[in-house]
Image (cartoon, rainbow, N blue to C red; front, side, top):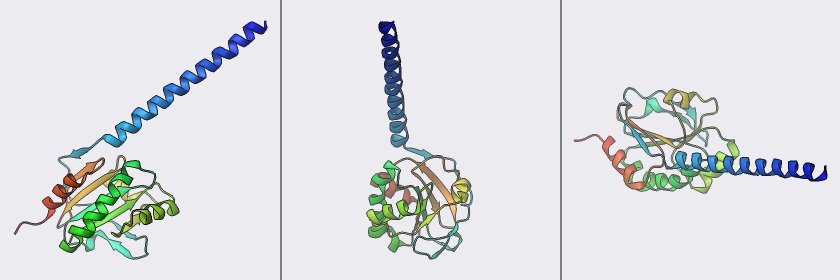
Length: 182
């Protein structure tokens, strides 16, 4: 009887271990799929939904007040791809686009306030950042997953949305397309 009981325990342990390995592999595949997906989604058009909120520093922000091109970046502190692109977005904002009349806005979602602020401090983000605590903004924009970005032409006309990590070359190309031609 001791041998049978021991065999049953061993079999259960093997099944639990195999299930754990399978679950870990499944989660790894999903993580890779979510972080590597880069999708420019064509055919998005229309007026950008309104955004009115307080920035992290307490200033009022309204999308309706913006006249030039707008880049909206949906992010969270726990989003690994967001960590990769945050320094690129900040650098381009500071070096190239802020002085050309662009508006960058970071919309933080599904995050604790302290974690969001720590992320912003770590990457020295200086463009306006808001928290979407009630989920109204991400619902209005149809955000599917993070990171997601929207490129908006002057007049608040959506040019495109982009799902996934933006590298510097792609981000520059998409931002430059928004600038009005003389």
